[in-house]
Image (cartoon, rainbow over all chains, first blue to last red; front, side):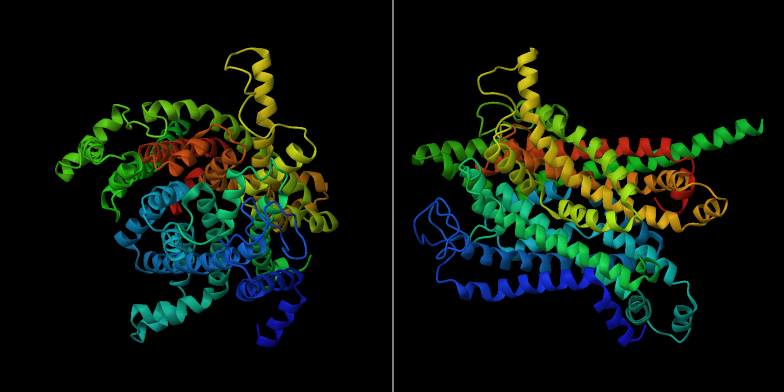
Length: 281
Length: 342
């Protein structure tokens, strides 16, 4: 596919264009949103229990905190967790997949056993037990523990692809010319699965955001600051639903759903772009 | 004679397949218990100090508490001994004493909560799997239907479990006032096998159950839709088509072939489904493991958190094993899939 063709297929793909616009909008909101609001996310800005109005676009909660402010700051940390956690999970998954698939032998056996174990082990339970004992939790630590638990399925998929690619002629040729293993993986094998790697990253990005939200909701979010999961946790703890404060309990989750759904749709769109068999429908 | 040899060979393959799976599960269990043991001991910060500072106001009681917890964790003994005694206690069913529900043993607290989690989780997995797959298969390769249904499925599968619970609770519980949104049965009742109790239980069960089903359903439907599209392209479908078979028949065969990867997916999704149930319980104050776990976290009841972790792991491992057995029944070619890759 030439670049021109590629751009043509991308622009023609409604799924990709739609989700790209949504994600760009949210990213802009997360970056510049905090400048649009005069309040601090934890500041008691105004009267409590206000539904959305002109001064408080998304209303206020039981403590009189401005929910729009909380939302944009929370969005920031959610996207950051997705980027860092998803990125780390992709990176570890790739490294282990390449190592296991390319080297084979006992290393392969060992790494696949490890990934099998981590795959049956319920991730959230593992995250809970680790996070519960951390005296201080921040976005970075959350991303790291998510990254270190989310890689197994990526590693397995990458390993399978590496194993088919490594028997191909161009890899043999590289080996004959005396390239070292790292160079072969980096220059011969990886470029052939770049589209796949990118799609994996998108899925890991969404997965990390969902995992972090679950952790926040269950009470293991960042110890300081705000996130979308913490907003919903507080809303639940302070009976926002029973009080009919939908603007407190529902908007943060709607934003999460929007992010993750856009990521999934983008993934499907990319699948159609890269895979001509799926394209016509 | 030849048949007999084949059966013996089949049994051997079966044994090998199951042994391999069981080894993975045992190793996972071992790994999980080790983590459960190691994390409180090697994590930065001292959980005992946190506990003590929460409970003791007087300086003297601080000392007593500190020595009590040090002994309870067995922290004054060598590490290896701590590790073996941890396993011994585990096999005795001793998971420590809950602090949040002092002085109840953790095991008792968990065993009381467990039936509620199972009551929402298992039916939800089963129903969503059946309905989701049918829906996905129905929608695939039907342009109009596909274009409207797919975004809905994506929204369902992308939403955090508990958020969807909040949404349903708000709409059906607060706006329409159709269903109660807290607890597993009416506060006026006591647990019994009476008709009124069962009715009240089901009435409270509907919302958490449907919220779980709906979120899980999206993923199954999308997976099935993609599989069916793939299967309809396969040679056997083309052949059937050229023979003049009806679309219905072709789809029936595609469904049968597509269901296998979905069962594998079921095993992979179990952990997520359990996690989703835990958070959904919190939304509905449903007294299952998730609700207990959150109380444990909020009250820094470490024994309870660790006990919940072990039970979740055991549950997921058992469920995985059941899915494996189910897969064996479903797929006669199991040996082919596993000789290449597990």
